[in-house]
Length: 391
Image (cartoon, rainbow, N blue to C red; front, side):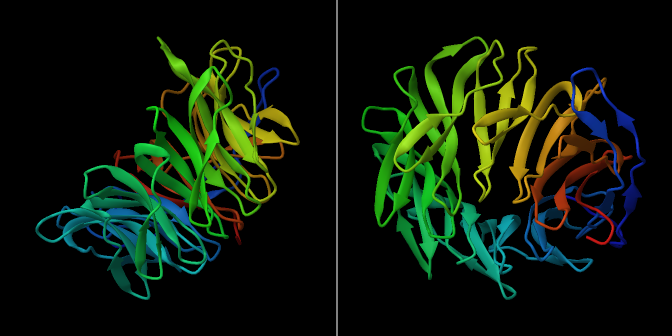
């Protein structure tokens, strides 16, 4: 989490450079401005941004003058300290279209980590399911919050918080579960242990948890990570075998009671994973290419598109907006550290840094605004906003 001795926002504009390798997507640097969102303490504290809504309100975590980490809200050029639930540290993870913010905070003694909801200048403790801690994963525009909480038995269970009440969503027969996303209709997805010791993706609706299964015999486990308002669910289904290169799986789309394999780029590792879906049913994730490099990918109209990244050995997609613009993180060709990028209409834009060697994108809204973190020349990590002029 980041800081600055006054929070005069620092603006760096990248120059226009174009390069294209044979068979690779165009990589350009456009006139995107990167703004340092400032600090809650001194110039030498770290910070990062994790979410942004359509109003341009940004949330994340930032270091304070006393060496603590606090959740923040940035809007109209002003940084606000959201404080804590009485403990030392806090951090905000997401914000909805109404400006409601969720995150985690340490409580006063006994010190516990609890989920919170911040609105109208007040931080509310969402409590737990009887155990020591809770953690929010997502919030929709109705103010419904989902996440994971430790129960009285000591096991983590998925929860839904709404109208002041925390509800245990149960499990698929095993001891644990975790809710990872919620759509505008209150449908919740995540993963849960089953009675036979596996982990399966679930959809919770109308008070019941539905097992979404796996992609077949080879695939013993699965987990869902996102759902849109059409009820389309994406996630990854995993093979039982763990090899020297790890545990492999395939991204899936579940809709209308059926689960479908989204496929891969055909690399030697033959794996892929999905991370996000928009309302048009466009899905982003990653897959190994035939070269062995991990690439960001877009699934649309039944086909997989290699987004290439910035040309280095590693790339990942993070999010997609309703116009099909994709953000992610990638090592540039010849580079060693990751840079945030934007993919749109077949072109990849290196979003640059605050003068340091590294940056990472976290979220995008519908108004050409992207948030994340970047290193300064001095190596300090700062919360940043990338935006086109007049956005």
